[in-house]
Image 1 (cartoon, helix red, strand yellow):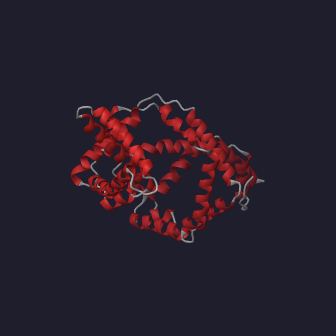
Image 2 (image 1 turned 135 degrees about the horizontal axis):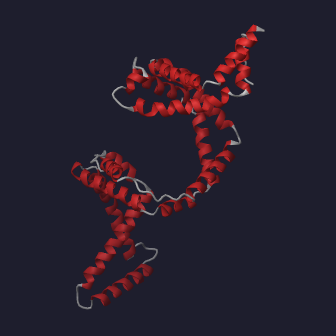
Length: 320
């Protein structure tokens, strides 16, 4: 009987004291901040749990339908989004300064990225049109140039038709010349992009792209999302998840990555890692309030009373 009275009194005291909940949250945050980082996380356990979770998600046949619904919802919300506010000038300037940095890329990396059929088709067509346009301008410099160019153009078509099947048409020779120029053009492009002396101009170009995107009408940018098929994208994401889940080294890589990060932290605590910045002072009050606000309704619930009673009786409850 006495134990029940004490338990009821304790429950009443907690439920009538928001300060007690606030103090509990502060004590818990202090404890987390003061512990060594490698005491907070175990790389092996965390990697095992994460890998198991990924595999369970990948094995669930309902995930693809879930992803499709979420993607369709997000796309709809983005399409209805209206953003009129502009970023502060200082923030815009800071981001532009970051993207404007004269980064020097590896020439082999640039060449490998450019070595794709789409890039070859694009550059080939640009060279063909540029060559044809240049020829037109040269011909037009002479008397009767426009007529001469028309005749050349007609002759090219006739010659191409007449030579069809023997591979000696003017069109074929133009294409052969352009194809021969492609490799040197790509080498020149890769070398130019990776040139240290050209790095500043590349930085200026990235800043220009940033400015264009910033000033472009938001609805026109978001409008491109109409091309996304939620079902198709959901299938692709599900396939990606299944591929990762089947990766035999998944847990090993996650464990090694986490272990490496913890090793770099050494014997530091979260508080020592944040020392020298205002991060703790900036986010802690808001975090404390959010946690206390989340816990307070639970303290008022029947589930909390059941849990407290079971603890008082020496038999911790698994839940309401």
